[in-house]
Image: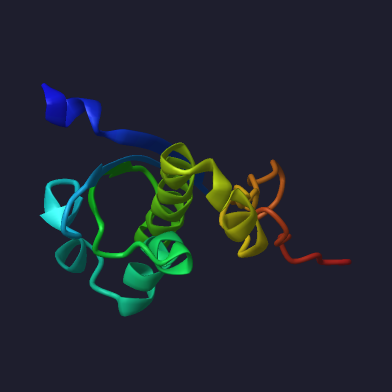
Length: 132
């Protein structure tokens, strides 16, 4: 089990998505839900968003990534993975905090879907008003 001891963990959340991220020293393999990152995220924007903390710190290719992500859509999942990776990197080296903080990678994005109100069409949309 020495390999298991080298795993570093971070949790990320965004909208309705929750990502559990494990980092381990390696050659840069990235698996998301047991599939390669490029296969899981078809859009290049989601791929770059997910691995942004690794590029910001300059450690891409030095860690293997294993991610379990659930809930929400693909963009929310990519944001959740981003936060999870950033938090796991802090476990690796606490001196990375100022760099990650300055890039805005340690802040959980609080924006989520607004609930639908009763007597209305949606969260903000109203039914059409008829005076007569």
